[in-house]
Image (cartoon, rainbow, N blue to C red):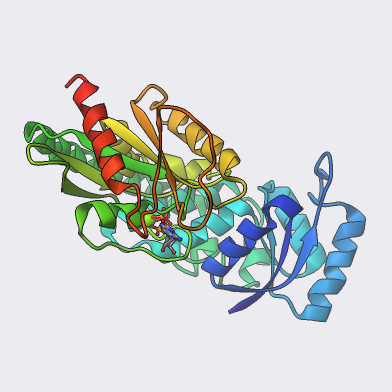
Length: 345
Ligand SMILES: Nc1nc2c(ncn2[C@@H]2O[C@H](COP(=O)(O)OP(=O)(O)OP(=O)(O)O)[C@@H](O)[C@H]2O)c(=O)[nH]1
Ligand SMILES: [Mg+2]
């Protein structure tokens, strides 16, 4: 386990701590950084960087994690100054995905995202970085990849793209098959840890990976759910979103996310026991817009009301539930029924 120092804004340190834990780091210190503009050379201010270097030595930290994305140059300069490994937000999230990937499809998509990310920061950093060894930010396609030259990475990326296209075709065939079943498809989306998989289990009775950690789910699962005596839908559970979701990752996960794009109704699951839930709704809406789903029929599912008083945001597209206790589930089913009946198919 690596000893990590976190650097970020006060408001987002809780989340960064959780992400660091999910990547297997032990947090030994947290540094709050607030600047109007990042330093072009080091990203953080010079004074802050000096303090950080003392902390690294004193606490024997192996790793500094920043809650932002650094340019390759900033990363290199900071690593030289701190004499320790530096991981930025994208590197951290990619690392967690690499740990979570189980299926062939998941592994393929994560590797593609990681290689794209690495390719963009390979220039000239090779021998300095390779001395820093493995661990967080370096997991995935193999420990020697930093010595691998760009050309080999490029040809690997080309191969992975082909495989990803195959996955897409395969998924499309499956989807066409499902469409012939004439059942409407309902996609669960939401911020990571919102309770999508818990709700999926509650609705379908099929167990899946639910855990208190972020990004528990990477691969989509689809199950049939009965809504009443005479009707049923297909529900799909998929990967959670997060603030500043790495672009390479969204790109690589297109095959998976097409399940959402092809759905008839989106259930946007929100953890309303989280004080910053409104901001998280905005983040998810933004990713949905990027995916081209801005106009999909949508219901907001305010989850975890066993832990908090449901907020009074009135609105016809909100259902308050607890996926854990089952409170509000009949009402939710009725609303899904109503909504898919309205969707032209
Ligand atoms: N108190 C409470 N906890 C819940 C509820 N629903 C889910 N949880 C908990 O929230 C955590 C995350 O739940 P998941 O269902 O894995 O969340 P997810 O949205 O699938 O997360 P990712 O797959 O990581 O994106 C777990 O610890 C659940 O037990 C709820 O209604 N009430
Ligand atoms: Mg999940």
